[in-house]
Image (cartoon, rainbow, N blue to C red; front, side, top):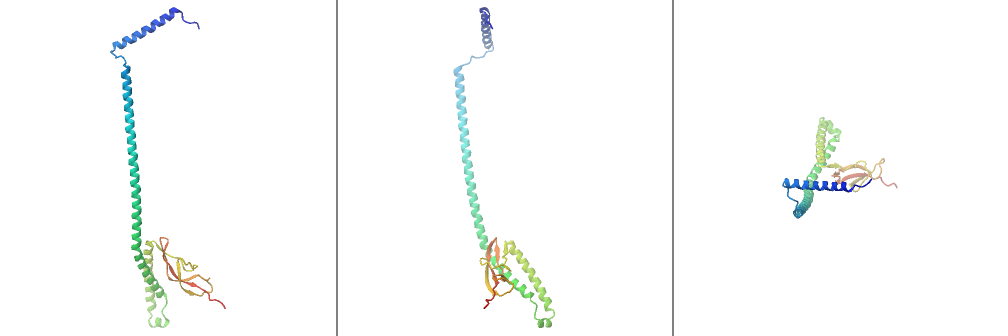
Length: 221
């Protein structure tokens, strides 16, 4: 494409100059102040300082919040440790208080169990003939003692006490103590034949060992 001729170039330059003059005249007519570059730079510097100051204040606030969070976390951890110690102390006091009570309940249970077993044995035939109502009285007494024993077992269970399985089990020295031996042909040596005194767990730990009678066959010559 060929370039503009000199006259066309001159017309374009004149038109551009006229446009600049019109724009300058319009600005003066509207009363706009000319742009002061120094003032503009000063305002920009002031704005920059303000942004920097606000950033510094924001960082300071964040640091303060972080310190507050760390302090709160430390307080919570200290409170948790104190609560754990309080729980341990309470559990220790509770155990010390409960043990004598539970031992007393177990002693009462032993006596009730002995009464139930004694009442279950039939009276001698001569005594039964002399006192016909004795068998009925003994049966009624045994029934009452069994009910009392059941209530006592329920009370012990509420303290998380449960019996140690022993009858028919092989001897377990860690939870059983042998207080007698008997021979039994159809039972293996070391098998528990009877409980002389029932043992109990508390919270899965041995509270009282069982006293048992185990099978021991006589040595053959």
